[in-house]
Length: 110
Length: 112
Image (tube, rainbow over all chains, first blue to last red):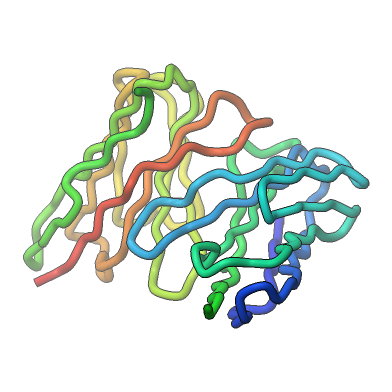
């Protein structure tokens, strides 16, 4: 059974204080690993797809990396508008759907 | 603009009632999904459909039903058999298994 564990559950940062979110996963064969951003009361917004170990993707202050067992979402010099819940999901090569982690809620204080 | 439309945004259900949540997409995506999200938790899969007239149960299908008569539409019915239906329901679609999902804005269902 596919499993996704995200840590920490919550993270509070000062504006400009860089940090990383972790996503550990277990799948029989990885078809893709996905990161989403979710604002309160809204649907998740797609950020990145990573397909193989060593791959990296960047978007503004966010950078996602992938190893064979985990993925990191690095946030460089965050701003208050980066405050949200970040969700990680994996797609098994034999599955027609993604399995989600419980998310990390990021709060960035000015 | 292409996207997914969920309606209504808020829905109230009385005990013993069936209610139907609408999900429509104009992205020409083959696959569609229904997830449930409870406060402070991740997304749990209810049902998914990879092609028209075919769908599969997810991890928490009991008390729910779906249909996929058209590519664009994937309505979810919450039946009276679902004992704890109060939650945030999210519909999503994807063009293929290798791509991420596009989500709707969600329907918040409350039992009154």
